[in-house]
Image (cartoon, rainbow, N blue to C red; front, top):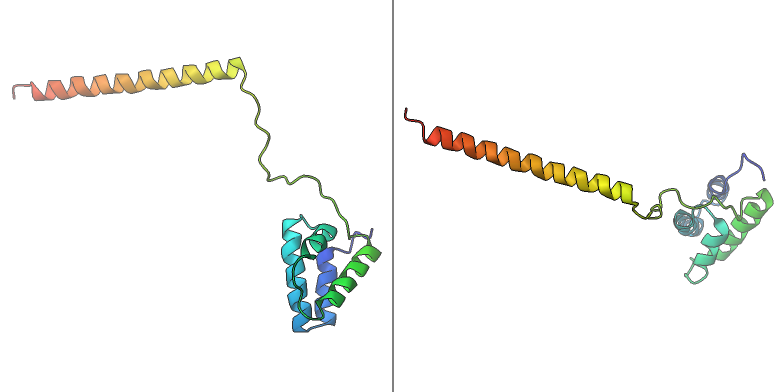
Length: 129
């Protein structure tokens, strides 16, 4: 695999070599699928199998596949998506206890604030001034 070559570099070369609407439309479809497959051209092409390509688009797609295979970037695997949600871990007893203590202390703080407000309000209302 040539580290200086990427699927997108090959696509850019094809756009320059064949500046036609067919090439542009076909490569736009490929780029859209590459976004869904984490830049795996093999999966992107497989996803395009059921979709209608522009007239002459099959030749563009075949040239892209041939060049990607030649450069070793046809079937890349970048591992799992780092932005996927992490697996949910079970909640252990210590963490649950700390959470319960924090919740209780918050409720006590709110109750004390309410009592202070009521006491202050009563003192203001019952002052003879």
